Image: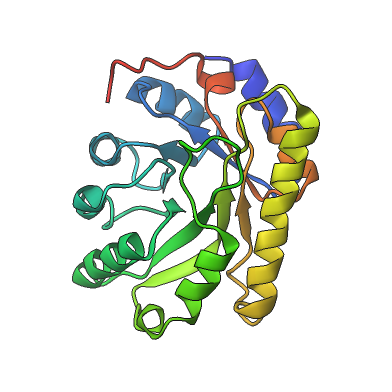
Length: 224
C-alpha cells in the first residue's frame, strides 16, 4: 500500500471531490489502515465480498458499489450500501427499488453511461436514459433516488480521447440536470476518473474519483 500517495492525493484534490478508495480483492487490514488515516468512502465490485467486509469492519464506512451489478446479488448490499454507481438498465433499477422497499430504505444510485470505445463496457446512451426517465413506470419507483452519473473512459494512452469522453459524460449530466433534476439538490454527482486518469476527470468536472491500484497496489483477481 502506498500511504504516501494517499496522503498526497487527499491533500491535492479539490474539496468538491470525494475520493472512493477502491478496495476490491484487498484484505480488510488494508482498509483499516486507510480508515485510521481518516478514509471513510470505499468501493467494491462484488456484492458478496462487500457484504462480508461490511459485517467485519467499522459501521461508519460508506460503501460504494461500483461494479457491474447482477439482479440476483442486489439483496446482499441494499440494507447498507451508501451509493450504487453502476445502474445501467431500468430492469436493474426496478430490482434495486423492490429490495430497497423491503428494507424500508431509499437507496441512492448513479446512472452509468457508455462513454468509452470498448463494447465490453456497460451503460446507457443519453437517448435510452431520457426514454426511461420519461416513462410512467419509472415514476413509480419510490425507493431509489438518482444522485447523478457515472462513466469509465477508454483504456488508451490518448489523453485527448479520455478528456473528450469525460467531457461527454459532463454534458450528459448537464442535460439530465437541466431537463429532469433542476430542483433536486442531491442530483450533483459525476463519478469519473480512476488511478490512471483522475486528474483529467477532475479538470472535466468529476465530483467522485474511484482510485484503487495507485493506493493499494496491483489487485489479486484470483479473489472475489
